[in-house]
Figure 1: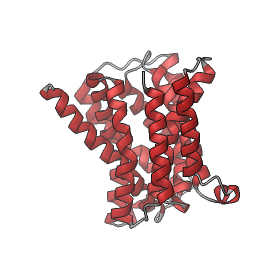
Figure 2 (figure 1 turned 120 degrees about the vertical axis):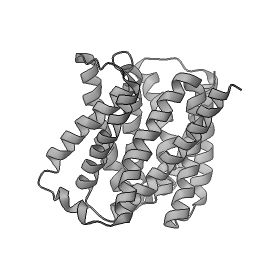
Figure 3 (figure 1 turned 90 degrees about the horizontal axis):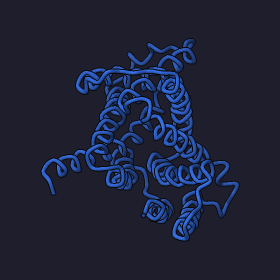
Figure 4 (figure 1 turned 180 degrees about the vertical axis):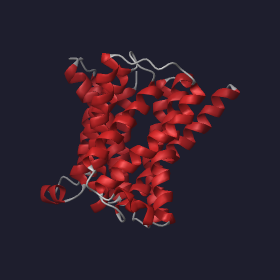
Length: 288
């Protein structure tokens, strides 16, 4: 293994750890401020933290009509994701939410891609989708429909569906704009949109919060998003998308462990079993 490849794999490990911890940070934030305030400050800090990264890459920014269409669409979906995630985490467990969203998103992305582009599936892919349904049945506790509808799982499922849309948009946006610029402008547009929505809220009330709030907010916006995403994009260009994507399986593990360690959340058996089954489904969907 090349020394550079080894370095990028260690960095990817760090990125997955940062992503996993983001769910615990969001759970902490739900105890303090309203949703619209958290959403605005998350995107605002994310936009600010992208500035030194843009300077480091030093690539010319090219915007055209197609790029703006993808950016604005993804910004709307990113805001929806944050709203659904906030509501789900507020009433549910951070660890459970991360597992459901992380395992369902790639499965839903694959289904949407196959439907939109009328792709014919192989027997192995049909098996993987069936395996994904089994894992979803276990994850969402569908043996009790009333329990599912009353729980936060429905918001986690909406998050997974929204993120599937974000994934499809981001894949096609690369033809028109660099991924780093794409992420920056998404956060910038989302900042403006969330500011307009939260204009009547007391946005400056965050400055009366304590150290725990600011650590969680900065972690979520800067470490759990900007830095982790940048590492992921850099590693993808060096190691390839297949190798890079395989590290995503570590996110639910780190999320469960961080929620257990920081929030003392129980690690539920059905989440572990359903998560592993769904992970195998994602593996077989991506297998050549």
